[in-house]
Image 1 (cartoon, rainbow, N blue to C red):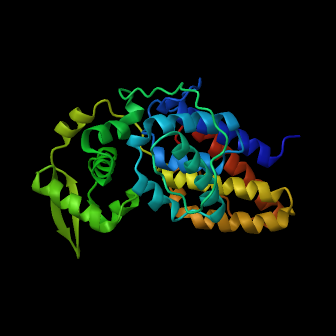
Image 2 (cartoon, helix red, strand yellow):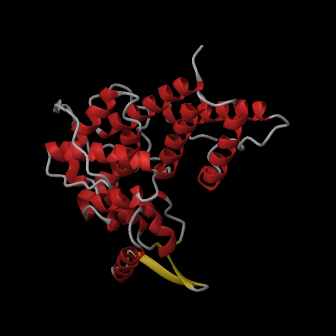
Image 3 (cartoon, rainbow, N blue to C red):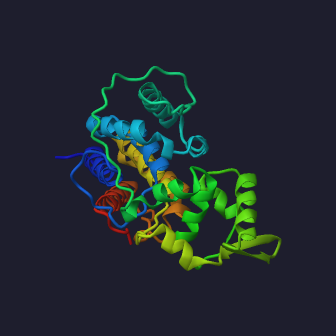
Length: 301
């Protein structure tokens, strides 16, 4: 009988393959044609889970070596700050391997040797795909906070956002605030004081959408989702050596940690049952369903 850990690994690998194939690696399954792919969180996710599928690890490395100029070193570094030590170690080796085959100059938090790797040369990104909106925006506005901020507004064109909220895109508040001020001066954004903050909203939505066309239908927060799935995989792996009662305690802590990130994306989070064993069973099934729906390109509800 397949274990929870093995079943989850299977879904995580399928998700990784679909997202990377959409970006342009040599793959077959594309379930995320209508999703805005976010490369930096995907790179960190793939590095953290690289032992699941060595071929996915290598083909994604091939893509990174070819298209590293479209990846933000600053954003990678900022997103890594919230990761655990194991993920940082895995990313450091992944980054060292990319650096060994391209002038990417990605910095990890640990000094490690690159793994043995031979690029396949099969990666080919089609920037006309709706899913590659972020790469198109970077080609237009440069690899930095400006492109990421504008992509965030395209994902929610009717929503006003403050500088504090937009820091979540992966850049420093000072940098974000400066760019918001510049975009307001260019009359691309409107600025309105709300309480003690300034909120910004797209002022010229149609021209920006036309410039960025074609737009994807779905803008998920892949940074939060992929971080959750990587943490769930750690939980699943450790559960093989623990009792259901102990795993239930760990699962409760995991869901509390990511409760805000998962809000509105899936059915209600499992609540503690009368028995820890039943709760662990419900949580493990919930995580598997969540990962399976994401892997299929569905919006978990």
